[in-house]
Image (cartoon, rainbow, N blue to C red; front, top):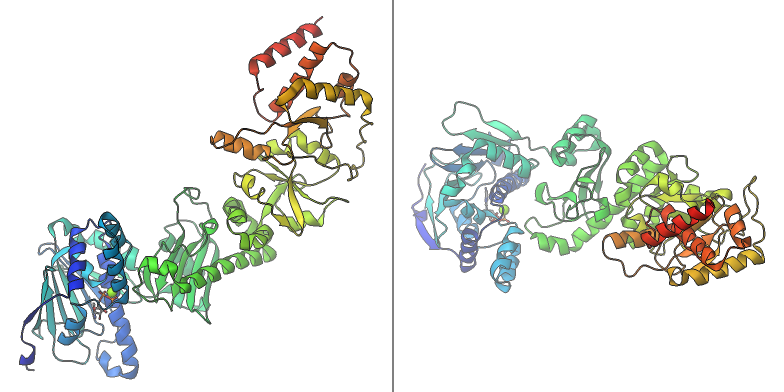
Length: 628
Ligand code: ADP
Ligand code: MG
């Protein structure tokens, strides 16, 4: 074996762009330095993949060492971290071309963005970017690369302190890897933890647990054998028949950091215009942070088995409970995350995966309603956000939605069920919103609906106040609140056993006119109710105002415009109302009674009387009179 004198040691200056990048790397306060390891392992895995590919045509390249592997060696004493692979390797010329220039188009674009931005914004950009080989200088003040290209006898060394120049020299073949590359980082003082085994193990598992090459960790000078921390098998690339339920559960647990089991596993490969694999899970239990405002999606994006980002927002927010990953075969590996966000390939993936998750839920709902309902139990309130966020899929989401209703006896009902049992002349889907199912079910506004056997959806979630006001309809039936506007129930016959209220008569009309006058701007109307059968009164929102519940919610968040004046509805069939109609009490007394009716209705809504002191005084006067 001879050393070729043609490659005598040579020191060169970095390309201007590289110097700029290195400067930024070293001087920026990088938010997450751990990513350097992801970059180096991803390069090592790439090298193994390249060899794998070249060996298809030239099997001899594999020699006696056909199994790809990545070995991470820690030397606490020397303060070094070494990443070695038996991949394709580099010649001295390769090194000159690749480790001194910026070849990646993504990096160029990144640099351009960076020079356009100034100051801290530029630094934030770095954090969003796959930074490549040079990121080693975030944690090291000297980087040494020794490599031997597959099939070559020569080996070469590249080394640099990252300060403007690098040196390429022949390497002693006896000290160089038989094949592949060894990257040694001389760690900065403040990066000493990167020589700690627990730390490196944690980072490798978290960032590179699913690279397609097995990864081993060993400690210099230790008798112990290298321990495998990643097996190099990407579960999602296997066919479903090769994967056991246990495999899926283990993967789900390690990938999602969950302890439960998946309630639904979705694993498929999309082919055609875009190729990608999908492995996603719906958890069996509700994560505690499901409603945190800044909780992002949990779908990881891989490109050809290399983890890219978990911030690609592959699924819409209302599917944020879905865990798992998408592995694209089309996206370029080193595209910046921002560029990925804007890529049409990602858009196609987002659409495809979202539709597939929903259609899978539809299938489950049809085939195994109980399993589906368990999912709805946990995540229905999140899915309903889609009813106002995702107009294009509203129809689908309404189909998936399940509700407790006045007729469901605690069970879930679909809108299809609901529409299938509409009453004669019923043209709307009625709903009642509130905080608590029991209380909604007992609200006075529901009485007339119950008397007619009309089913009412009971909606206890915050989002229900919103999506119901978006003008949605299901199969041509609009949604209508039972606490808003005229109920118009008179066309729908009463169920057997209930009797039609007697004609309202002149007396009642007289009292209503009096009450309206007396209550003045406290109400927007006083009228006879369709919706009451047992209670004497209730309040509802006027036709074109906000529904009562939404108004209350916004008011409690300090966001409501002035509250609309309610409509006071009276039950013409109620004994109290009949007596009021015929009473010969004086005007003052009748005025008190009108106010008490309004406050009674408010209290039944769980609200306080408009003027608690005046209410107390009226009540006292009434009680005094009663006692004679
Ligand atoms: P990228 O991986 O996007 O190409 P990097 O900055 O990470 O960019 O790496 C630059 C180049 O250096 C790679 O494209 C590859 O040619 C070469 N390289 C880096 N690490 C290795 C390695 N372990 N084995 C072989 N080549 C490598
Ligand atoms: Mg790379």
